[in-house]
Image 1 (cartoon, one colour):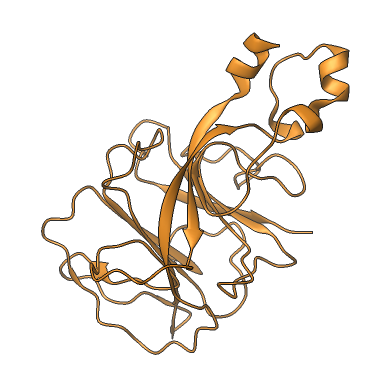
Image 2 (cartoon, one colour; image 1 turned 120 degrees about the horizontal axis):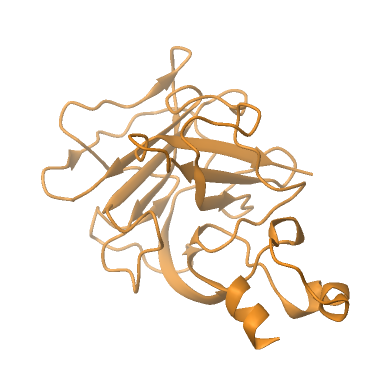
Length: 227
């Protein structure tokens, strides 16, 4: 049992949305707000319309940085204002920007996008034990452990860096045909949140992957599932 637990366990960073005083530091992590960009970048658009700010995640100062995020300092995410993107590349219906450092970033002037998303500051917490959903278990389990899997191993939901994805329907199939040329691996997720007034379809989860294929490390992917 201890060896199985060791093989399945991952550490993650979970985010609490709101419930505390907004900090003065504009580089703080936010849900529903993006404050910074690189010089020359503008507010992203999709189909000629401004995207909504989904979150700004400051990776500096965390207790640890999950794998595939340890070379980055800030991530910002925007989402298209109309239909949720389905298997589209970064920049089409969604936009993720990743920055290796904070030096040189400049304020991104806020824009009125008609966003229904509510903005709240976010606070990080360490998730010591995060376990895969059944579909992601890649090791053979004894029958007595398999039968009690959901009682023994908990997958933690919410906005989460690292750990295991909180699956709704099946394992993640990165388009196209789960043979994406960037060979992405799961990096973080943004869950449906009533507090933040954001939903992926019917109480779904959005999963963000980063490329692992040679020369494609900075290629990001988005998939989402709902009920």
